[in-house]
Image (tube, rainbow over all chains, first blue to last red; front, side):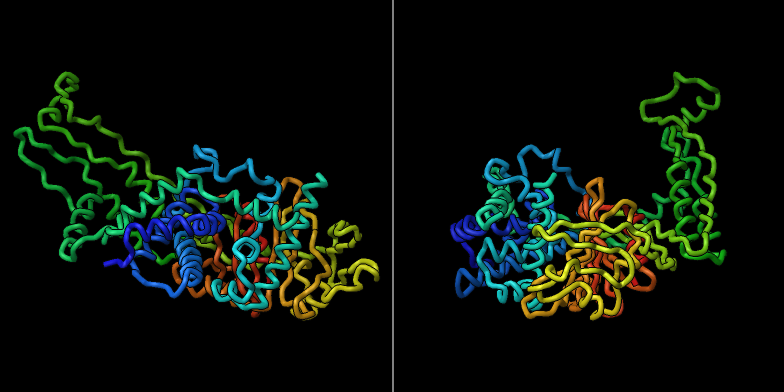
Length: 162
Length: 345
């Protein structure tokens, strides 16, 4: 029996759905799959019934669960059944609020760079915290961040030169 | 690009209100379900019944004809499956030939169709009387000619014929064929000039003598690509088999956290928008999680396991060679990717 009431679930969902969905979308690159996996992440949390010491612990757990669920999804044979972006009615991102070049530049990064960049610059985690969540060395996270910055700079410079 | 622009980019990935509501509805619906709708739960005793039904459907058991009082009569019981399977058991063949045989079996099964007709219609068909056919009768289908076995492609010594990889996310992955590929020298690759931060760098594709540009360009950086190649023992750019028309845009100097580089990206871009990036890392901890996960299908590349994932646009291939970790990110064809991976030694 889960210890999460419906009100608690709605509260946690409102607080973290954007973060979980973004991670899933960046890893799976497909809004439909990202929605499915986002649901799975929260359902997994609810069914575990685990109570966390603080919101920070809960947030970190959701990030780890999201990454693992995305990896599970990637290796599931149903992942081959997908809709193309053109077939989806609603836009996958809000084009009005951000520079398309920057979005494309971020999207072109490999996952091993994209997730640390998101967690570091957007969510405000330190490289040490990111290394624990992703299961990689601290120095590797820092080099990934440096490489991502270099690559974003190079990509955006090339786009501007076109 | 500043941090605000980056944050705006991430903000754009937020779900819409419709998506949020849809996901919340899904969560509320699923949270109390014990059973996963994607899984099929059957009691153990039903396994035998399911196997029996499958055997009957596939025609391994002949269906007994019923009386001529209007009940359905099955004709054309396929026995070709038994014949082919007998061939498979008796012949000594390689796994690729077995796969081809199985493909032949599948083609035969799709062409062989059970023709059901009532006893009355059977008589009427014999007498060519169309008016006697009922709604239930299906037109009798003709046996298709047996498909000829696909001949083995001629193997030219030294030529890479890695035409099929185990791609994760594909529902019908083909088995890979690892064939030794000759080292492809890029000594004749044209020199490419890369403008980076206003400093002209000469990216030379030949040999290990990758120039780092002018002396002033190297000043102030922690590590050079040349030093990195010395550390790992070779310059991969000498041996990579790339699609035609790609330009080397590898960054040859960098600043590192601890003053030495344990990782480098070798990058190429093509004129048609394609790109190849090979991340080389002396720490293989990240790639190891893919190899240790048995759920990911592995591809054999010259005796080395690789995990290849395709997201509909880009391939990501993880491979460890001689304790060096390689992660290839590319939006090229599967054949080109196979040739590239085989060339990594």
